[in-house]
Length: 381
Image (cartoon, rainbow, N blue to C red; front, side):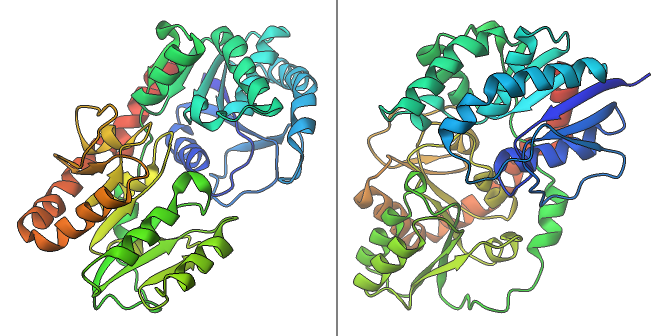
């Protein structure tokens, strides 16, 4: 008889953790009897027909952080009852709040094996000295050790938990995010009709927020000597107007384009020349693997965590200069001059450009979903 697996996540909106869950649902549906437990009704990914959905609550995305905090004990108790009534063998929770709820359920008496998955670098996410950040750091430090296992999606995240939250290393298991490389290949061949690629094209994909630091990329392009270049920025977020204003002030309207959210960014990525990534912090940047799968050379900040693990077999620590890794170029975070040097380098050095194009798709193969799913099954077993 198949074991009963509950996968708890806030929603299936378009995000990194949500995409991973969508892959797991398809990959594990024959191994386990799965219930997807959500806290919000947003679903943008296709769910297999035999997956049951249970709503722990139906909250609004705009719900205040304090209300989310106060509801944790109630939701933990409710989730405990759900696991008991449905004889759940294994509970797998993704991201902070679902992880808190899952561990509280265990504390309230749930006998389900409790596995949580940390998808970010908590010390960076909760770096501000406000009430919610302080509480979240306290919850991680005091609840996470009660889990049976903790999955991190990068070694940088594991290191953050051990160094800054005193989580025992024996609980931690690093499993990279799974990718359907065949699907990316098919989607990348779709036609693009609204953008010309007649000039050397740099592209980036991600939310328009402070952490992604798109302002740096726009500043780089304002200083770039080669004007026969363009930058495509795919994504939406609260800084759209700010970035739009920066583009106008720097008179880059004909070279830098905000294209908004696209459900299939691969059709743009595969036709661009170089992928650029300017984040100040990450958990595991899926988009870098997707760029590799599209055959793109990559320039990325060496932020915690993820980029150095994706572009090299050895992680970098606080680099001070531009570093040419085996599968891409790393630069220090928030350094306009060194990022500009890296951007110019891939224009001036065609041999290096071709080298990275050849290497990229080979590197993407280590993140193939089949290899990653095997590690999930091993841990769940």
